[in-house]
Amino acid sequence: MSSRADAVRIFKASLRAADPAEAILRQVRVKDDVLAAGRRRYPLGKFERIFVIGAGKAGASMAQAVERLVGKRITAGLMNVKYGHIAPVRRIALNECGHPIPDANGIQGAERIARIAGDTTAHDLVICLISGGASALLPLPVEDVTLEDKQRVTEILLACGANIHEMNCLRKHLSRIKGGQLAALAYPARVLTLILSDVIGDNLDVIGSGPTAPDASTFADARDVLDKYDLWNQVPGSVAKHLEDAARETPKPGDAVFSRVQNLIVGSNRLAVDAAAQQARTLGYRTLILSTLIQGETSDVARMHAAIALEAAASGHPIRPPACIVSGGETTVTLRDDHGLGGRNLEFALAAAIDISGSPQITILSAGTDGTDGPTDAAGAIVDGHTVARAASLGFPAADYLARNDSYRFFEACGGLIKTRPTNTNVADVRLMLITR
Image (tube, rainbow, N blue to C red; front, side):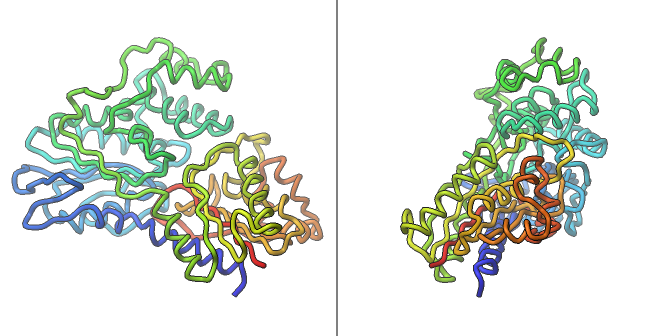
């Protein structure tokens, strides 16, 4: 079997391990009408009502798992999910909306979710499901900021290369629901939040902008993000004014609203990366997990990965071929051309292809576990030492396409796109480097 086929098999194994329903069912059990989540127990018969709310690309699959666990006890439920990321559910409604740019459907769903939380009492249980993408899928801007303002801020942050911590810091301070404010709405109800993490470090206040977690960031931190990227003249005036006024901070650690909240991470990028490594070993590769904490500018990270692969091919360090080097995490792309089409995984693959050109023993795959890379229908791409030369012979110079952030059109024309359709999970990215003798 070829290295390219092996790489695809390894990536598919990582997707299976990141199945959100299985992740929940590994950590949450119901026995004798008692729900056990981590070390906490919830006697279901003691609650007058049980509500299920939340958002994220994995929301539909997570909702399915909760229906299997709690079933007919669910009073009502609503999940905001990305368009197309749906699955059959009975008691929990799915509201499809925009990602990564929030839209009106997202606001309507977020308003309904806020009303559900706000109408609960101390005798109710709220099960909140959060996965990657929840920040964009749960938009409920403060009163002086419009949807159009929020969309503009999102576009600016995506283009400037801000990382997820910086993006979500701003989002929390422009929202009525993020940064622990959903927990405040639900208080004093019991809240159990099950989280599928797509964030490096698994910070509770960053995943989905932490709607039920204490917020460690402040308005000052949000203003620092605008300072860092020199964005004050680009963001709408209403946004600048709100951040400068800093009228009301988000709930902080120690706030009473969190005394009845449990936040439980049920899965993360580590699950996918470990499964990829195990599959690679099964296929006969020596395996090295480089890191699950990779971040930074995508093209720079790609070239670092390519350099490691080239070193392994030339000297057998840090691992001897046949080898599979695996990494996870989430990089960022600073847009240089507004007309390009791609995402961080497609750009990673293209940048890496340039550096490994002429090294046929190296194959590299980079893909998002959610099945969609940026605003495209591809999860990512696969390249090898022949990719750049083959594309050049067809009239597609790789360096030109990389310079204008047009990686999708490059791979669409030359081959190499990885298409999985929406996977209904999201635990960041998986990158594979296969080196043969």
